[in-house]
Amino acid sequence: MIAKKVLLVGNFGVGKTSLIRRFVSNEFSEDYISTIGVRVSTKLIQVQEQEIKLLIWDVAGTKDDEKVPKAYFLGAHAAMYVFDLSEEETYRNLEAQLENVKALSGLEHFVVVGNKKDLLTSEEVESVLKAIPLNIDLVTSAKEDDNVEDAFMSLAMQSLNK
Image (tube, rainbow, N blue to C red):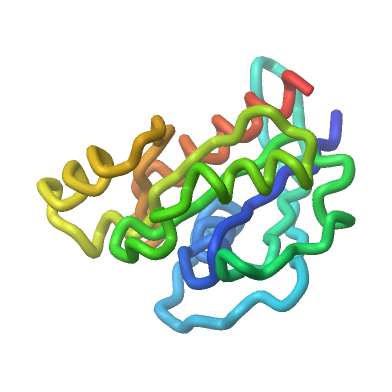
């Protein structure tokens, strides 16, 4: 078994903790509890016939002008950047936010996830995706358990490349 440190980062309130809770324990809660600092969860998974212990670091959300301690990013094998499809402020400066995470983590690539698709119609989701100048890897809903497993499997696959 190998252990891989993976990060979930993004603005506050985008659903990072909800995605982790759905993936790790198949639970969802409407209650919002802000993460302070960092929370680490673990899950054993199978990827390419390897057992991997994912050490999932839920990094507290920020606003664009707030800084996250660099220590949280040290030793990370992969990262997922999460934004809220229903809140433009969480993806308006996506390129700059990803550059900041790249500088802190030293990682070149991220799994980029638009969460909370359950709050929008499929037409609204398409409109948001067209407005973003980057490729979005997955659109998820922690509430409806839509693409959550796929997002974490992508993250695990990325961690094997580092």
